[in-house]
Length: 279
Image (tube, rainbow, N blue to C red; front, side):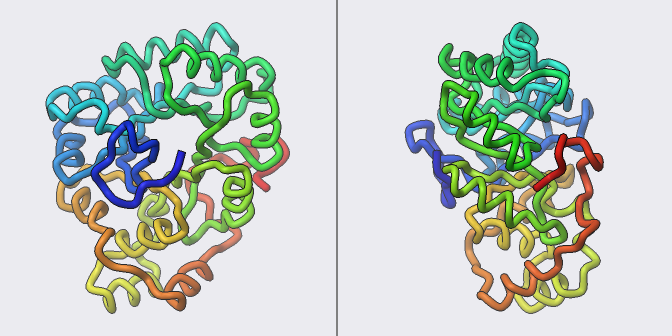
């Protein structure tokens, strides 16, 4: 699977749209109108998860939009408590029922679980793909060591790694590891849950470009060939976050933004959640 930087997207392209719409912070409260606004703005990559409680709203919006299923890249995830083989299979069936679709384009393990061996959940994930319930499979929130274990234990190739990534968080090692292993890197919390907006460097670049800070941060990821899944409940911001295809940052701007990384840059992931640390 490759990253597609331009629309239109189609199932036959074998690509993932580089800008998607995330539903994570909207736990249980995602309005179908919000998602319809995203689809109207041009988003065709939609990210949800069983844990978020947003699958039903996503499915409702997709049906209301009337966009052909093949034109949507749909991701969902299996939560860490459901990684035993039988539980994983049940979770996938529940996700498809909530979404009212026959398959998802990408099925991810949401978090590793030290109490459930990867040797059990990775074959179960591969089985979902072989059954046609997922076109691609992958993992989220895995460090490099766990990623290598997952790759070794999965009977089907992994296509993607999803993890937090934005200018305040240095993910250079994890990004390099994903690339070396042929995985697409998908960034969640690409705007640092709003913490980027007050940064003077990002604001200076945004002002010079006549763009928003969000657009600058998303373009920075895009130029690293990283897919990003920003979210917003405001239609204008939803549209603005998608409007990043008609300009490019120069090398100096890319370097200045990369220099914003900080040791306490992580905003979403509980400290120590991944066994063995993040590197």
